[in-house]
Length: 230
Image (cartoon, helix red, strand yellow):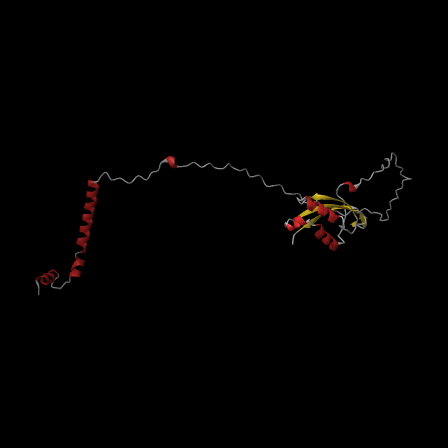
């Protein structure tokens, strides 16, 4: 038996103690010794470094930005309640249903200071220049086949061979029978030869009469005549 074991037995009344049991029995000594040592260390730190201060975390007032608050809004009071309409009441008076109104005649009610009759209005010649003419049914071309042949025949050869085409807007004045009375160029194609050819084509166009409701009327209309190469 070793000397250490003998001492452990002797110190515990002859009972054999392990190292762990011996450490547990000395816990109080170690604990209070550590507390005393920590207290001494803290006092030594405060004694050796008395200038220790906390870090300055303050801020400068110049860094603050003033915010302008919006003006206060006065909330208007709620609208007044609308008065309810009165309840209709049925009348109790007796009304004679056989009410007749006497006829009104000029003999019984003579009119004095009558205005003079309208003067004779001279009608203007609408065929003199293009003008607005009311109608409900537009004139239609009746001889489209003949117009196509004349259009091809009157196409200027020099412009056709050069591949130059264009559109000419022509004003037509059509009488009550659908006959073309007058034509004139509304919008030129930019080539005088095409404008002259369009006038020749317009002279052979035949129209159906224009109607204003059920009455035949003379009208001005504008139609495009187009020359295109194939």
